[in-house]
View (cartoon, rainbow, N blue to C red):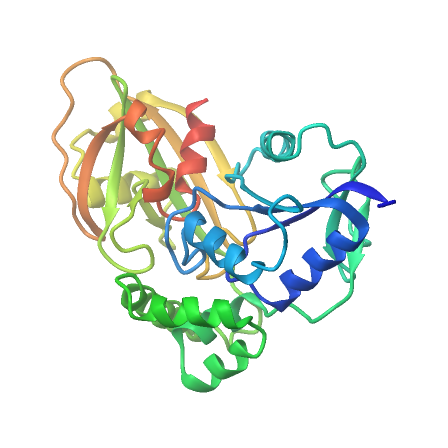
Length: 336
């Protein structure tokens, strides 16, 4: 008799590699059913998430085509950044939907991670020993970088994943993300010899008016073409609020004096997820402004923004896949 009703592997699967296979096979040996739960399902296509949820599910299905569908199940879950309880509920709901009635549930983790505190204490950790998973930057350099890095990565990938990546490199998204890797690598190289890794400080503005939020479309890498909150790096000689208002005007042309913006200020909050930006440790201070009733002011993209628009809050609620880094989740928290 199996030890568990269900064994869960929660991963982004970016891409599917031999360590994933080893974990799923371990789960099949310990449980009646196995659930591969694909995380970050609603993320925009960026260097952090180069493949859509559908593409990752297809990769996973191809790499596990020898596992019976009634044994291996696949589901997806969206991120809930800055809302850990909401994310845990979303995972539990996905598990309930994929495997109704499962009582004895185990969480598949690497042996290196087994001693860490689990966000799901009711699910025992099932330590998996096997081939090491390739690191984040090893994957990005192996997919978008030079041939030696590619050959090193491919040794960790099933043939089906290698075939997928071969077609992906010839597709419409590869070139832009390869350019983004070059930008990020250059940015990180510029501070690599600093005595300590720097901590960057930025500001972002959540500007709300009559059921609309003000967004900009990024003109350059990283995230070229994605929608974002207006904002940027703080200058050496300005306060956080002054930096926020400066960036807001430069990127959107919003023509309101400081006094009016100060009156409209409703909230300020810091967002500091350690890996929120691939450029390096970046802490952003976000200000929410609620503009008074009246005609919406004209805006236009400027500086680092290719465009600026007032977007309805109803439309914005469906824009996670079009939004840069964690800006969708930041705005959701600031709009609560």
